[in-house]
Image (cartoon, rainbow, N blue to C red; front, top):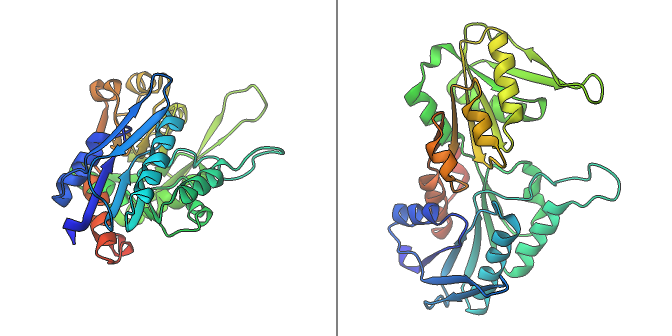
Length: 314
């Protein structure tokens, strides 16, 4: 079956795609994704893919629109080349934070992007830790939302004394995710409740749970500016926590986020390679990257063999 599998890499995270291909023991399919002088994207698949099971690996990270367009054009090229089945493997789904209308006359961009991927010709979608689980329902094609939790848990077990660990959700919205991870390592749960008393005033952080003397682990799906994470770390340490680490699936880390985290009181930020780490991330003293290539590779192998993907997380 592996011989009938085609793994294609866009430009957004080629090292991750190479690691997935190495895990599967499948060579990357020769594919050219380049730009014309006006930055228009051109794709040419340089191998026969007729009747094959094709997987396009492309996180829609910065620059989001370029990488999304690359993915759409690659899917279209595969469809026109008569691939048997096309799976869009999107480790980081870029528009996931726009999953509802926060105010009048605003878009639900996550649904628009789901429509684009479907209309381009994808038969399935494979993603990791969607910001909002209901986005699976935005797609009219089968969608597997993988959880990075097993990879994070293994790293926590290898590096920390679990007897004194406390899992912390940095906000009320992330409680379900944090609780699931706490259950896996049999640790208690605390919650950071942040609120602004008045417009223009800084946030007040209330800790729900007893964190005194604990090794706290902040758990979330996305770290972007890093502000919430650094503020939560300060609040936990002021409440008596022994130290604070953060385990986050997607290291968006835009603007001065890496510098902010480097100079913060966070002992360590652990992120996955769902988004290709920048040079700033690689040299940061308290940021560490762990790979989800084996997780995605295993999910691809099971998809190709028509086996259960959900059993990966039992």
